[in-house]
Image (cartoon, rainbow, N blue to C red; front, side, top):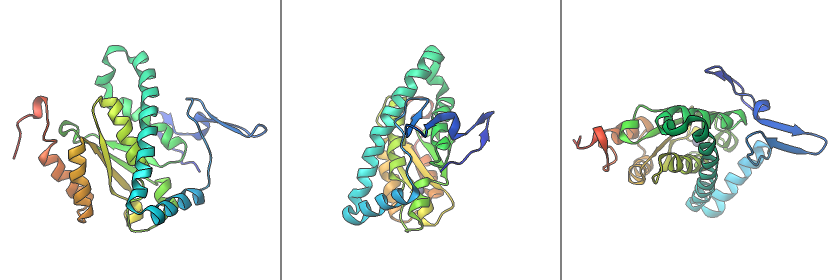
Length: 226
Ligand SMILES: [Zn+2]
């Protein structure tokens, strides 16, 4: 269930986050998350049933679920970070995101790596290696990690204090090595989703979004239109 590793001096160990009391049958998280341990087959079954019964709407169920989880998760996290970082916590956006991500890795949801190259364009790109959902679903020829898209959108909406949307533009279940997501303003991500449906590769989608920007930019990027 878990993928352990090390980065920037921090070990990503499930034991660091989770505490199992086998006698009481209780799994608790040191950060107060509600936690349940499930087999991969259950994740695969839930994904397949929702897709079969609801088609595209199944993806919305996953996304909306993730949105609520991500929002609540970041609200709790941001409250803790604000206390520690004081007034300048928003300037530490990158390290906030890095810290926020490690529990996902610790519990075996995959190795989440943010790419901030397009931050000035209002975009955060996230790569997820070994997504637990995609690995459970197998190579089904469509993106399946809508739960993660929702989590990213919910969390970044709280962090950036602005509406954020996310889309998976490349998925292990479509035959790629890793899953990739873009998080940004809703209109940007809608464009990304439509290009993905047309078959555009993730690299092209990110590049085109980077060229176009959000259409609602502020600060140093304002006015840089093609
Ligand atoms: Zn995926």
